[in-house]
Length: 496
Image (cartoon, rainbow, N blue to C red; front, side):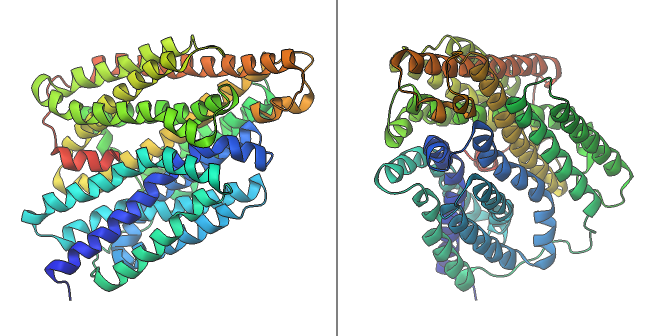
């Protein structure tokens, strides 16, 4: 039986679960230099550590909601927490890059259920008069993982072995499973829909092929026939997926959602913001470690301006949008990202942290202004009956944007780094900056570092170009006036 007190205990368990999921992205970012060294991982491997999680998360988000409605949200949540905990242990004890990539993919399956189900059960636990307060707790928990990740991950990496950054999930998962078993009532949604297996297979295969081809192009060069063929196959599969969704009687994605200009524009612009954010979190920790010589905790501290700017921008963006309109706020946010990326592209190996802190803070503010408000625009275009499926589509697109961002910007970084390596650099240096730093000649080492910074600068230009394209899209397609959702809901959906 659910009592007034026990429902808050259940909410605490849900909040802990979302903190664990939120930690996972940012905690990995500071671990990348350590993983490159200890697992002898190439730049391509580092890209897959992030992309495998995001791709599986994106692919599983859509069917997860339907399965939860059928099997029961409580059962699905507890099962997902168990998977998340087991996958965390598998990550911690991975012996090579391949094992870690597989474990990260499994982690994505657990997160794909936890994210939508934890929000869905709030409507079961709380009456409307209490729901706002409960949503506030859940929003805060969702946001906590972003700033905590770099600091907690950096401290753990400096004091323990790298697997500790994954094991921190285990006690949270165990506590969550016990609390949910004791205090969360079972609930179901609509149970009549069919599962679109064809859509799941086509979308997953297409996304994996596209991402794999892009990452391989970074290793083999953009003229490599196999890489280009893989990218082409991924695009064909995704085109086939879109065709199938139009024909299927029970599609995975309701394409009618995209008939709304507000929904489509908001979804695309939020995806562009995710593209930029995850790409930045991929390259910056490596820069701080390889070029600045900082330990993991020091790298985490130096990421805080991005996070602080993002949180400030998110809080201000909602308020400003209600006065001047979402279109102006989103356009300004994307313009800040583009301008900051252009300035950041002038970073050199000798640049001081003050210069770097300024442009990454501006980038964070731009991200905060863009992402929640863009999601707000999209959600505001939906009726109440379509908000669930619409939110699932938005979350999936954001995760895909992040995975493609890591793949594309990581590949640009890798290509620029390899093309500018000194001719005398050993062949092993081509695997990534971690291997390149093993050279003993000071002059050669300076050349390796300069090559990495050149690659990072190129990736910033590409990311800034994507944001500039977003500015044009926002001006061209966003409605001038949009009624916005409640701030708590949108911040929860955006993870900020």
